[in-house]
Length: 344
Image (cartoon, rainbow, N blue to C red; front, side):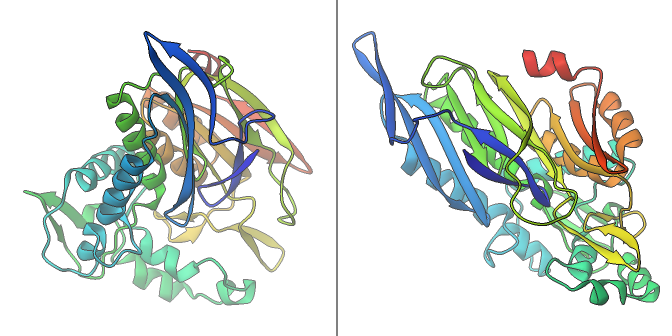
């Protein structure tokens, strides 16, 4: 089992299967060429990647190069990245990775009614992780109103490979799509190398194709949320057996604080400037790309269960699995297309 950091909480586990520990596992002969299931692991974007694929040769060097190129484009923590240059108001040309993120972010911004907004970065920083409850509660409405003056996707535009801002304080955070987009990039690389069986897991966002080294569908577990925000969560809500899927999960049950007796999430609603207060604890989304699933999972966590289900239906190419707190118990709600999309 490999724990996976999803969205803003630990929200899923990947199940590889008992006994799968070796770097290269099952082999077979395909027309005189030996096919091997390789396993590549490492750290990226402040989390881990775990990649399994069937190929004649190890592709880890190519995978690492692709991840580094992605980091050079969209990392907020790489001072030389395209995104960092945009946030620092340095004149820079955007690249295809940045522009693909921008296109998807534009679509999900509209689809979610502004619940998904990559300019939310200043609000996230203000409420930031690691702060104590009293510090978070002390953030004044005046401070939030001031920050909101430079939050909004309508305050930026991308024209001829340049980002233009209406306010230099506007900051972009692609983190809500980065892991999913990176999964798509690596899956594309594997496909280009002729791989037909692979699983790409970056921080819990997943692209799966074909079968595992036992010739069986890939097994992915959705973690059962903790309600008390204490300790590691290992119990699974459900285990999926999938062969072709793009999936992402977001959850906020590990990151909340109390304002008096009121429980507040660390998920920020960019439309109001405040943390959300609904009962949706985890959202797993499957869609036509992992980047798209990633963005919609984040949007679900902002919207809450009813609006999330509406957004997923409007998307037409997506389905969701929502875990909701109902008093002291958990309830699972799925969109109408869920069973069909995970079975394809």
